[in-house]
Image 1 (cartoon, rainbow, N blue to C red):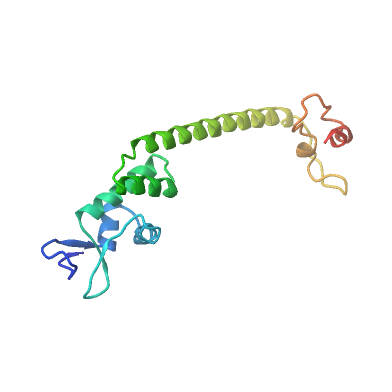
Image 2 (image 1 turned 45 degrees about the vertical axis):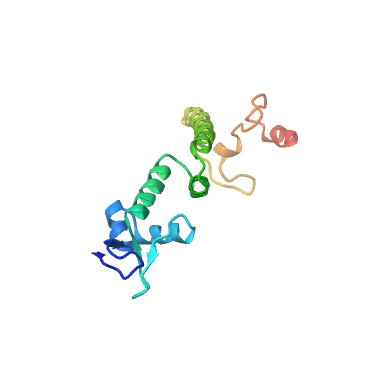
Length: 165
């Protein structure tokens, strides 16, 4: 809803949390969360206590959402906003944070690729093995005989594997 709100700015038209959230395709609860974290500071009406967004605060929400799409955490976004509010350029911080994030993402991708390789090997090895019923000594022989950390161990000899752990 857009309306004159009774805030200290006389002639500006403001939007409620619900209206601005709808305009950006996020939930009002998400916007309230950003307010609670101090990332947003909409004006509060003296008439009804509602919070209202002016253009500057809506632009700030747009910035937050853009930063989130780039993978910045809310903590990172808070640091960026704080740096800018101090009158300093946040660009060096943004570059540092994005480089760190890029490294983390590349490591996650590499770990996912290693996991995919392990899964492919497991599927190949297990495809010809028989099913077995659980017993007091075994839950699932496929997993229990899987070679986890020691490639030189005989996977058919779980005692040897446990002795090395």
